Length: 318
Length: 318
Image (cartoon, rainbow over all chains, first blue to last red; front, side, top):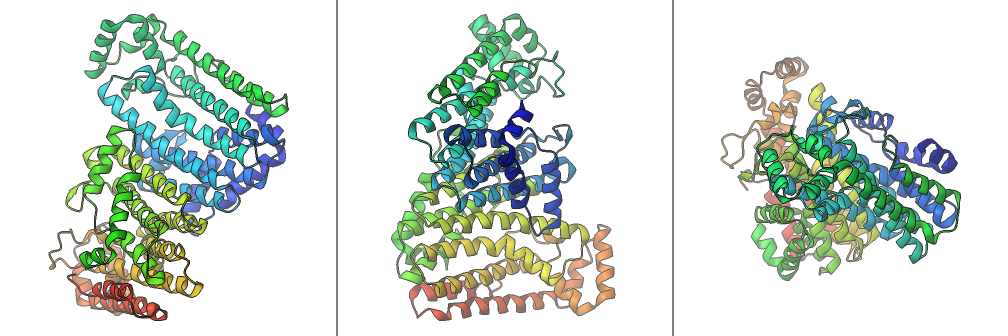
């Protein structure tokens, strides 16, 4: 799917990759070394893809400004990962040592700040002012989402609304900024902007829900450790589903166990009360809403690819 | 001196304080708690003072945009302190526990990102686009300065040029962004902008040199631990002065001691070879250059206060 999108984007994707590498160049050798390391270990680069697809969807083409927005979205994403790795004390990401482990937490924080700064600079000249607001608001929302999650990991009283609030802030937020900036900078209409925003919002929720489901799915060998969320006292969708099915007393008992640092019972509890099936249903609703948001657009290759990306999230092993 | 400046700035300073508190308001209780804690433990707030003084110097008045720039400068400063505290593992700052120690490194990184985001947002509507570039470039330069310092702490081969490069990036950079944005947003001339920039550059160097001298002055009771720099293998101005006076062989011997983790000999070496007097001389040259940069401006209260601020840095116990 990812390869298909990159092929469709063609020259625009190449322009993204070129600018991404150029914009990071520093006069500090050690910083260039870290930047190269990070570029060499890029993930799927979903956010810049979404950004460029949004431009294609609205105007049939990308501009220099679209490419800049794509670069900014990936830079801000990487910067927040660099900051998260320090925050979480993570030693590996995407199967390779983190900058924090390889060099130091200091380096990870500083390189993150450097990427944030380059991300904003990328946008200043060529992009509409509103673009700067999208990404700046997004950076604040990412922090707010994470802070709220920390608060809830203390109190262990996460509701479904809290959960949606958290994942909307920590995941949908950057999907929205990436896609809205992509659309806005090719001069989309207000209706198109709203549709793209709605798609990005629901896609972001679905994307995070899928991640949270996978965390309860040790059977799937996806090369990622599972069961991490509950060890960090994060109450996510599968557990919320099991709580709803099992009732208040059962919830209180499980929460007491978690509060006491005993986590072994959580996975069996979730499985027994259909938490994963529940979460999968909610995820499918979200992808349906994402796809429905695109209905204002006529058929096009960009629309088909965005639809396929959303529907792909429903497949457990995608 | 600080009180005098605040009194002179009067209503403009009050407007700064008001906007500073308002702009941080979040919907996340835990974030508001941390924000209040940080506002309650603000330092001298030198950067917003410089920003507003630059506006007064150039135009005799501040505008809403000046106040916004002042707020952004303090927010970016605080954000980088929050990030530094995680990076350094610092438990106290300004005599109170750091956010990192009080809550967690995670919170410190995230709150820093939140402040960065609010800092940029503060500027978007009311300020000239160039202002965004000043502050974004500055954030990158702060990171570059710190990364270069880390590189040099490894190699232990810091030259005077390296030292100036480091402190220009990690300290002058934000002084310059604050003052240039203050000047620019009241419609200063190109000559005024250059003069303000030069003042800020030299003041920033002098400010950091004074800090680095104090780190070698255990006799002064300034409520700050001394000798930290060399423990972190940072070769600063007093030691560079002693190196220059003592010659290459002596330098090699001291560097070998530092490389071996033996630091006891460094302070006596610096004292014996006049490192502090040397650094004090260089500092005084910098403050002279700062003051000289103001010569393009006619006499005014703002000019007198900026001159006094610069000259005050030469006093060892100010």
